[in-house]
Length: 347
Image (cartoon, rainbow, N blue to C red; front, top):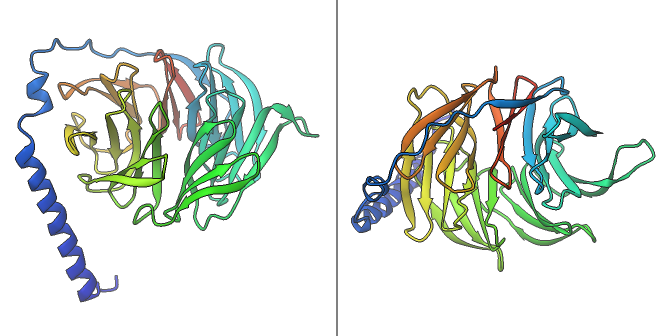
């Protein structure tokens, strides 16, 4: 290992001391804790979600999954080079889409269910129209959005005409899907790979998480960073906006999940599993915002009551690392993808 440059070491220490100073200042204005305020609330029931459907069809690791806005259809991407559109109610495949690159890291549904977007190590975001087929009978490619200098790690549709992507070159990019042109681009949105993003229901606020161990809140109306949150000690693999729009949760490689209040400008919840053996890869919140789900390297989904910081259950059934997690729009189901090649639907 090469030795750190003395000047870089000095700057890192200076940065760390500044972060510590900000965190100490935040503590002085934190007049209470979430657990104290919610202490008189009744406990939520223990989670007993069971696997209702096992979606079998991939022959390699599943790296991503996402519910459509109808809470029925799910898209999953796998290292077998396929995107599969599933009917989660019946467990049947609706479409199988062969990819030009097998190294898919992200797949996401448009809320309308008309389009899916995917990308990964091909440094490109590819958008498919599920209602139109090409000559081979597969979903038609409507856009191949290129120009990235790193892998595509996450994306979110605004609607059928606009999408935002996060990538390993530290950029956030907003695209017009009709013209295929960039509408806005933020270079150095983070100091490292952008790993995850989540959008508020009104689409005015975006939260991003990064390997630089920070989370940022963006105003989508002018694409400006409003706040930066610190606290995690390793990569932030997943972020999820709270249904209220006033908070968000995060899941990290440091084996913790956390809750941050945007108005209070600080962390208000810390969630650890009973046995801290594995990092977290994915996260989601129930429709009520009371339950936090975090997928883990230990092949289980851990569940907490976020108000009282109580671990209230595990969702066990996968046989390998859980890579992705999606909560349906109606709040009735959770989809998980895993390195065991399966997608599971939990109720």
